Structures are given as structure tokens and as C-alpha cells.
Length: 267
Ligand SMILES: NC(=O)c1ccc[n+]([C@@H]2O[C@H](COP(=O)([O-])OP(=O)(O)OC[C@H]3O[C@@H](n4cnc5c(N)ncnc54)[C@H](OP(=O)(O)O)[C@@H]3O)[C@@H](O)[C@H]2O)c1
Image (cartoon, rainbow, N blue to C red; front, side, top):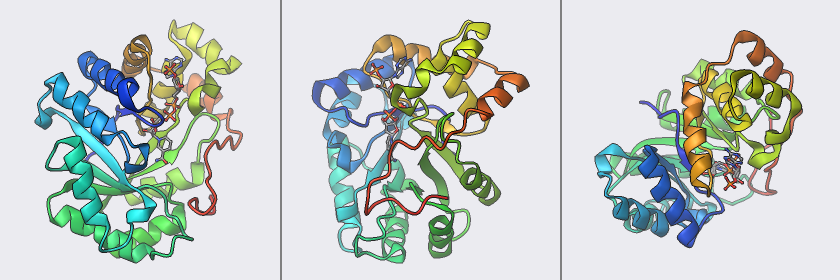
């Protein structure tokens, strides 16, 4: 199992905005696209991929099941609907979007349905998103050790999630960092700016390189071709031990996203 380290996020983008972003990204060499049922852009993403001419075999597509589709009789049919929109027979990675403890569907039920989607060949890998340590443990207990490819979590220089990432590492589960740029908030940070100047890099590149060097996958989004291009170059930036230590000190529990009823009790 493997999760590619650099992808394109598509949250908040629909219609022509997401079509343009995905097409530009694919032209620039991105091959990993992160979408979700709730983003309501799967059909646009499917259209952009089709128009790009990039062969399906070169792509890694992730989607996420929305909470209203967690029941055993709904999850797979909703995925088939997503696949139709994405114009593909399978996704590479399928995630449970939020643990949603108050949703009325037990974790065991949706994790079993997720595993069933994989058995049916509708997804190559399965994983979770926004799960804390305890819920990740429960998910492992249902589907088996080694089955959960990733836990996609909010993680940026301002929210480093050290307890959860240590647990995931111990379990061999890849961390996918979402909102690595804290939706733009880290871009004005003075320490990151100093490090960026030292390397003649952008602040976004520094934040992304920091996450990559810690072994996390990243999926930054952008509507601007120049940002898409420069973010990708974060893969070539090497931060030194002093840079990494300075960024470690920026932790401030800066969580941006925690929807009531969907989020767990965070570690
Ligand atoms: N699993 C979950 O619950 C969950 C939740 C949130 C997000 N996600 C996923 O994670 C992805 C990333 O999160 P995100 O899109 O919310 O936030 P993000 O990637 O942290 O930040 C995106 C914002 O940063 C700006 N930006 C990007 N590159 C930049 C650059 N080089 N210089 C200046 N500004 C730059 C973009 O503006 P411009 O368009 O102007 O470049 C956009 O406003 C999402 O798209 C989604 O796929 C998952």
C-alpha cells in the first residue's frame, strides 16, 4: 500500500474554478487529486480529467464518503454514483470523511461497508479522515491491521498533531496533511518567512516541504496556476535540522476545522 506524497486539493472549488484548477495541475505534472462527495465537484473533476487526456492509469484519485451515506445499504451505491461522476470504474483511495459519532451509524457498520467497497474492486485502498487515536484503533479492529492506508487530518505548522501522528506512525498508517497552509494563515508567519528567504523559496514551499520531510502526504489546493506550479517545487526544497526545529516551535493548537456532530474529541 502506498499513498503518493503530493496531490491537489479541491475543497471549496466547483464548476469552472475546479475544472481550471485540475486541468492546470494535470498540465503541470500533478497526478493525485483529492475530492469528496460533499464538495459537490466530483462531476467537474471527472470532466477536467477527461478533457486533460491524462490516462486513468497515471492518476491517483481519492474521494470521501459523506455522512449521509454511511449506512451499510448506502455506502457502496453512493460510491458507484461518485464513480459515475468521476467517469472511472474505481478510485485509488476511499475515505470515511468524518467519524460523525452522533450520526446514528456505528463505526463498525461503515468500516465494514468501506472494506466491502475494496473487495468489490471499487477502490484500491481505504482509509479514514479526521479520526482521533481511539477511533483509529476501533477502525483497525474492524478492518484489520494494515488495511487503513491513511488518516487524512488537519495538520499545519500551527497544528502539528504530535500525539496522533506518533500513533499513526507506530501503526504504519500514512498521515495525509490537509490544510498544510492553514488555508493561507501560515503564509504571513515571520519565522517561516525567514526560512523561506534563507532558501530563496516561498513560504508555502517551506510549509509543504516541512510536512513532506516529516513523511506526510500533502494536498494543497489553489485556483492560481503560478501557485500550483510553485507549490509542486516544494518537493525539491530541503530544510535543514535548524529549520525543522524552528518550525516545530510554531505549534499553537491552531485548529481551523471542527464541525459539531462530525468531529471526534481531538487528542
Ligand atoms: N478531510 C477533510 O475533512 C478535509 C478538510 C479540509 C480540506 N481537505 C482537503 O485538503 C485540501 C487542502 O486544504 P485547503 O484547500 O482547505 O487549504 P490549503 O491547501 O491549506 O490552502 C489553500 C489556500 O491557500 C492558497 N494558496 C495555495 N498555494 C498558495 C501559494 N503558493 N501562495 C499563496 N497562497 C496559496 C489558496 O489560494 P489561491 O487559490 O489564491 O492560490 C487557498 O486559498 C482541500 O482542498 C481538500 O482536498 C480535507
